[in-house]
Length: 150
View 1 (tube, helix red, strand yellow):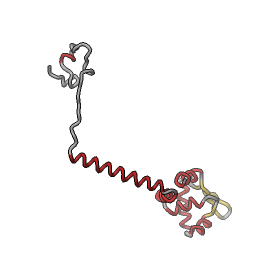
View 2 (cartoon, helix red, strand yellow):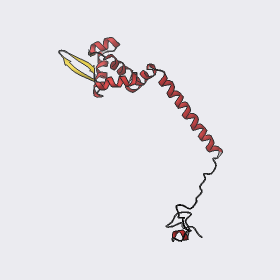
View 3 (cartoon, rainbow, N blue to C red):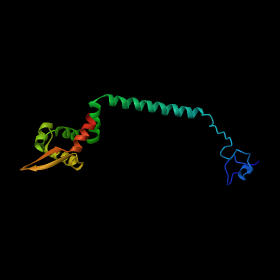
View 4 (cartoon, rainbow, N blue to C red):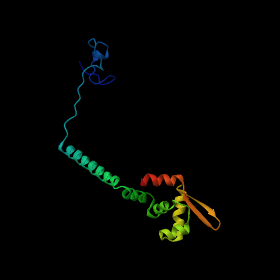
């Protein structure tokens, strides 16, 4: 019988659509076989290239993860920039911009610029203390350091 292509499933005959299929069989229980055609040489080459790329990526990722704090510190520096990462690390105690500038050998204006960016990100807080402004890490800043340097 001709297969119904409109209003039925492929492989469903007119008899099964009308309810006169052999007892115990329905359109969903009729055997259907679908096999994928074999891959072409070009498709196999693409799959091999993708597999090689995946393995290369995993090796590089594992190398960075095994590198310990050096590789992870570079990740923090890539995220924040080297000066900001160094400033965030240096704030394990409350410090003024001048103290940070002297310790890291940066200009006070540069340190103030980076402190502003870190404060906007919620990684540090600055509070006035007389004529100077003291900076300290927030819980978010400490968590970020712990995440990247553990």
